[in-house]
Length: 75
Image (cartoon, rainbow, N blue to C red; front, side, top):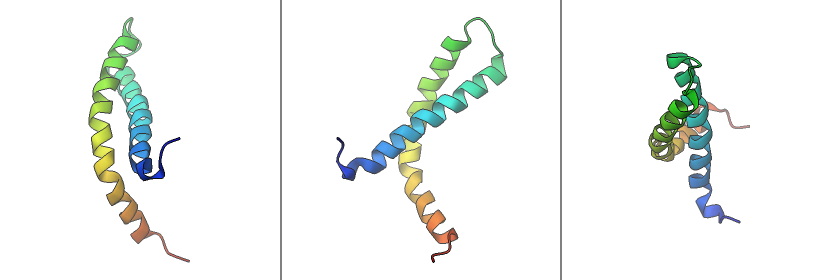
C-alpha cells in the first residue's frame, strides 16, 4: 500500500488521469467527429492533456481545498 503522506499526490494523479481522459475524449470527438482514426487522435491528445493536468492539479488542489473550507459553514 501507499503511505498516507503521498495521498495528495495520488489524488492529483488519479484526478488528472480521469479528467484528462474524459475531457480530451469529449473535445476530440467534438472537434474532429467520429473519424476513422479518432482513437489515435484522442490518445495523443490525452497524453498531452495528462502531462499538463497532473502538475496543475498538484499545485491547484490545495488552494481549492482552502477555498472550499472558507465557503463551507462549519457545524
